[in-house]
Image 1: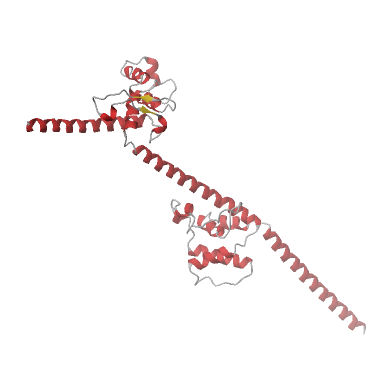
Image 2: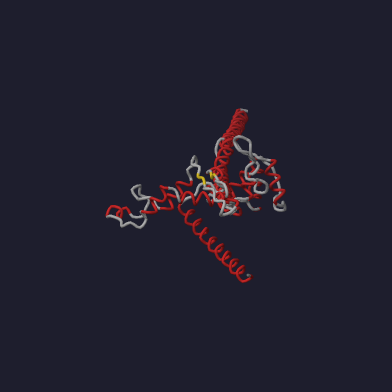
Length: 296
């Protein structure tokens, strides 16, 4: 009888130990899951991928920015993402989308077959299931936001340059050319022009043609400076004998200039363009005079 009781006692102890072990394992699993929920898994995945940007964008799909004003990584509809330079290097391909669907499904203990899912279905699933913890969200919002901001700034700079080029090409009226000529005839610009061919002393030779403040102003720079003075109104003389368009004085204000501010290189280019046009007009006038003389 004593042996039976001892055996039963040992059996009960072993059963209790098994239950304790199971409870400990359950607690450990819960602790591990809790630890994973408070760590940034997406950063680990991103680093493990070799900082692959497609991987980052795939993990960002379905999330919104911190201010919740923009859906992240929309390479099919977002204008900035659509027009991004080298878009193919950023837009996640099907393999990256499938891997991300599997990663999120595993987190949520969902079984899903991705091998036959086309790209639209993958994107739709990710948009509907943006499962990330707060640390992953913060990491993805920060990294995707950096790329988005740089892309947006680059596109805005390109748009501004295009607008500026268009404005500079719109010298199709009298006033821009008249203001340029008037600026070239300004006393300060003429004074610089008179000193253009003077022999330089040793100090000026040492300064050279760089960007030093001691370097004298060139004629083109002087013309550009006068042209760009916003409050300066340059007015032509009335020349009724030249053409009816110039019969009365014409005021040219800087705010009316279609190209805005100009620099020394612009002055050189515009002056060269004006000379070329003047040669064409002179040849045309001579041809008309010769034709008229032949008729008489």
